[in-house]
Image (cartoon, rainbow, N blue to C red; front, side, top):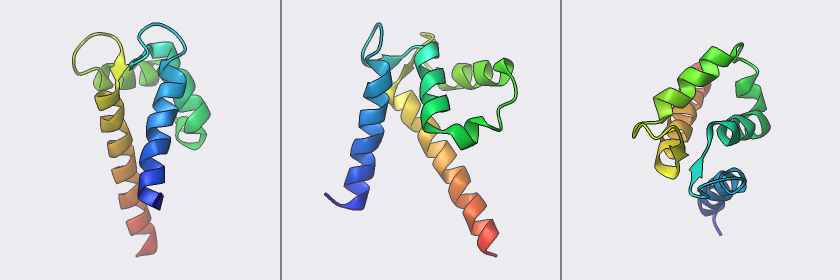
Length: 94
């Protein structure tokens, strides 16, 4: 597989690693999302100082209002974080 194909497969695998823990295996419960973020994005989560920020993130991701995060909502989050990281790196290079 190419680097990009490997990256895509990894994102899918990480989502399912956490979503399959309890309930609907195609959605992340709030607790599963919290574990995923802390385990898989520890540097990013180091900047989150309180539970209210994390709760707000979950509410923002939950576009269909079901109190869970499906794969499309998760990918929206991953895309936004990746774009922000890319923009940050571009400014670092200038």
